[in-house]
View (tube, rainbow, N blue to C red):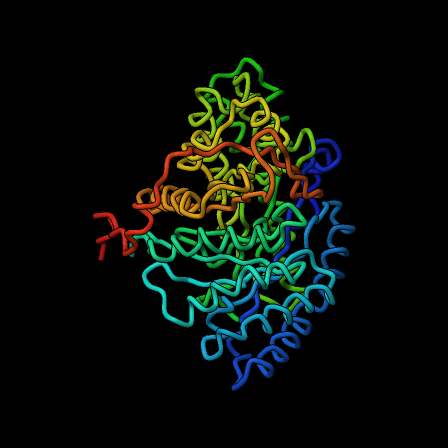
Amino acid sequence: MFNYKDVLETIDMVEREHLDIRTVTMGISLLPCIRATAQETARCVYDTVCAKAEKIVQVTGELSDEYGIPIVNKRVSVTPVSLICAAFPAKAGLVGKALDDAARNLGIDFLGGYSALVHKGMADYERTFIESIPGVLASTERLCSSVNVGSSKSGINMDAVRLMGDIIKQTAEATAANDGFGCAKLVVFCNAVEDNPFMAGAFHGVGESGTVINVGVSGPGVVQHAIEAIPEADLSELAEMIKRTAFKITRAGQLIAREAAKRLGAEFGIVDLSLAPTPARGDSVAQILEEMGLECVGTHGTTACLAMLNDAVKKGGVMASSRVGGLSGAFIPVSEDIGMIESAEKGVLCVDKLEAMTAVCSVGLDMIAVPGDTPADTLSAIIADEAAIGMINNKTTAVRIIPAPGKGVGDCVNFGGLLGRAPIMPVHKQSASKFVARGGLIPAPIHSNKN
């Protein structure tokens, strides 16, 4: 049973160490909204989202005031829209606009679920839907999109990977006036999860109930402060301290999640333990790793430090909640983490090192800006590499990459707010076009045969 006493010890974390509930995300099933036409479906989608999430901003505000814990984002995720629009994929943009209008009307930050799941194959309607993504993201403000192109059970759909390289380029060009901002709202997954509360990759899985509340907690500053308090500790002691800290953070998230679900008439889904940084100093995953003993994140030893951090966060969190889910670990989005930004600007942190780090942390290559003239097949090859890490290691990996139009290495894009700024990072010039053009399916690994 949770009560006010459970969060008393977190007051100092909130005031001095940037502890917050990063997001309360309401998942909504749109399956009952399917109608005979796109126009009718769009109207029903708008009405359903507005009715279900009508009070999410009000309730989260009340909870934040009552418990003294900032709730930064209020979000909604919906059933993958490709399924809702299967009968009229060429008009999926009508549903996308309806969702964006609903998000604006509700005052929520982002709405996720303009998504497709094509990890084993891609039907004609799914291809048509995916081809609509650049235009829809360019013409909407708060709508986010994701595409799942691989899984540990099915392998990697390289036809979808090849297509997504083109889609990312088109999205960047369609939002060129904003440094390719549309790409910041587009994620390519392997092993996408159905209960992720974080954007831009959130969608409401078909295995979920009608309306669910998922909460993402965050506290990089809290973890960094805990490590600072034991400067001479060995790594075993550091791991124990991180576990205890993650336990406290998760308890606060569980309390908020249960209360939000009750007041909003939804089911309590999961608490996502992920350490999600912001561009603010003192709220950085990179600075945690540097506090462990690295001169600069990205140097040798970074992957080992990140592996220990990720594991300790998970171990501490699962002791505090029986409803842990989502992604749960440490995020390394370059543009959203001041330590990552500074390391990239020094040239210490590169795409290859980030790729190695993604093997041991949550998600993958996140909010990385690359030269605008990067070929589509190079983007596809980067996606394939990241999907392979996820497939082989049976974990979620993703790519959210921004080929910034008209910009090159040495330049920077600045999106502001939580999305921060990103130095343009170099990519290899050698081509992978022949590999990408082969298409087909990279078969699932032998350990997928578990039935």
